[in-house]
Image (tube, rainbow, N blue to C red; front, side):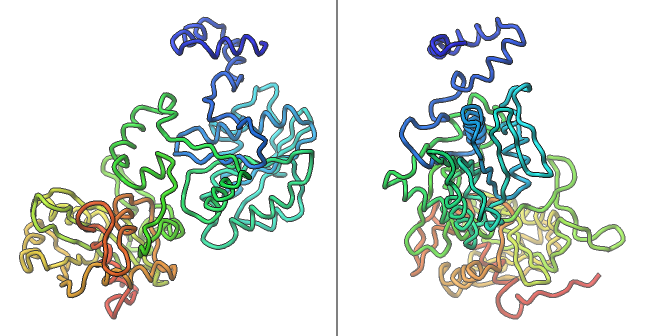
Length: 467
């Protein structure tokens, strides 16, 4: 099909295009589906400018992987001499996402024109003569030496930005881009305030990097309705939603105790769950015979729940945050079970459910708003655990500063994303201010109480739990 006819099709209305496509035979429809320029949104196509680095910095579900895979396919088809580096956060992600994924390189190629994939050699070979090679950004030295003409780097914000390996991998790749007349790199990522992403956006200011921005909603027509609705309900009102869905690079508040980059560095996957999707719970700490199970929460020696009760049922949320500590004295934030606009009975039941779900050892509750009433409300909700009442003799930020120092020292991890909690943490500033969402950092305060109990002072020394 020539370009004139393709352009004519591209100018059809969506309804007319759907009707025309439905009239095709199956083989014709399959063949037409490979004409990426017909189906791609304009922002998924390479910029027309004379660029060296193309950065797609967009929200989840935007279609970044498809855009990167299609660009690689176009390069391999047009340049028989192409030597393409495929770089991901790990070799497993290069294979599962960039090559074998639903929007990966193998999926976008016609069966009779797909490259030969040799996993043992970490190599793709096209009939044209072009080749692709797999690399892990976690191993920067593997990019020292090999030469390439092109590169696709996926999710660069997920590379190991905690140290210098991410920038080392990028720099080693750049030094090896010396084949062909015009070496180029396409980088696809969800924006996060990590050093490498910041550096590329700074370079865009000087014209060295072409940047494409976009949101999850740009690709809403190709995403499951239930997913879109869930994302809107869960994250649309959060700062994290602006980053992960709207594709914004969030800037930190000046003087904040926690920064987005700091929280990204401490993030780990959440513990595995068992049971039904509706009533799932973490893999328990002990098996039926009392022996620890692998994974889950089995390796924590102590788990506590921090509670910051609201002053009234119509005021702030009740902060309920679950944290654990292991034998290596590393703390993990396991869950944010906070509830909003809750009566004392409702938030107390939420604490009881969290205690049962996470097999907590103790509840740490701030007693300034009601004193002994807090403990009596928890007892009425059948919270059978020891309840320790703590009194706030200092301001929230003063209490938070030593906890923030634990994060800086690498002693605290987040098991997953906690959008509302992290928004509040990033709103606490040195000097006593709070510039986050809501009137009060209730979730952050609950976290501070829990981590203070686990990590600071005599009560914070980890102990081996007897079996």
